[in-house]
Length: 413
Ligand code: KIV
Ligand code: ZN
Image 1 (cartoon, helix red, strand yellow):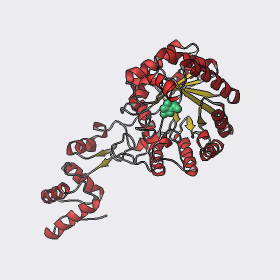
Image 2 (cartoon, rainbow, N blue to C red):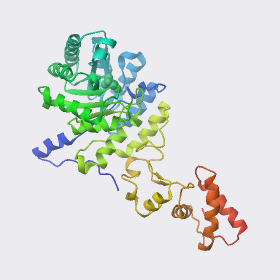
Image 3 (cartoon, rainbow, N blue to C red):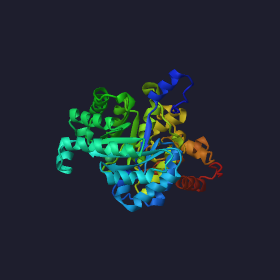
Image 4 (cartoon, rainbow, N blue to C red):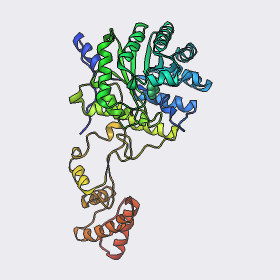
């Protein structure tokens, strides 16, 4: 089955309104939160190359870095803002003027500049990390967002650790940020603590309780400490968030962020149920994943959804038989649609004869029926002692049988 992509909305006032509420925007933070993965620090030229690829992928926003963190990152963000066309470009700022000035200087030449301001709002962040109290955090939020708005028309505010904050207090911080001019409120589950139902409740409560939220874009930013980042992002979207933050390959602080490729393919594969659309070019997911992996040095696990090398590989006889007859028996999306090449029939000791014949066929070898049993036995012997039987080993098995039993069939390449 081919995943359904988002179709272009038809004209007319009604469809414009409907399409706006259907659209889920993607905010990519591979170059900021992703780069915070231990060992993943990127050279500015690598950041620029990845940013161009993110633009090809069609993300709506690129968070290019944390300009106040180092002169090198400031320059990297500025170069991306100057050169990369299409997505909005932003950088992260703590709720202080110096950081906000750095972000603005770095992104002001972007086609669509955006300032992203954050401050911790859970009690543990307020007291233990910032050494402040709730009232001071409220005041700093108002001041920082208002200052950012003086510089830039689009300001996103993130109440850090919203997932563990007191909900009533969270709503008052968001209220202050909206009144000060934030047009995007991003709700982060900073520590990956929330369960999906809690993430949904968080989004729903903020949207319901804070005045003026109908004019504000709600975003979610979920970490993967409990392996729930994608589920939590989808729960937030189901509760009305229309922007989702994440990283390619799910990289990021500690266990990482929501993986963009997972969230978008969940939206697409389940479009009949979710009825949402997005602006991504999904065929660029594979190339983007491979680029991010090679530049950050962070290997993609083979079983990683969508972009792992095993994501479209079938190894057991039962599955191979099914897929060879009809792909949708074991595939809910196609490898071609996500830029992952094509699905693979992998030969292992768990494979079946259908897969062996299929592979022989693909490499141009026909085996007479009466010699198939001998070949199968030899194949199993080799497969039992190796993880995977590659074409080279298969050719060798065929060659050996040819030597011992002359009229084995033609071998062509
Ligand atoms: O995880 C987090 O809270 C963040 C914010 C700065 C958005 O990365
Ligand atoms: Zn984060």
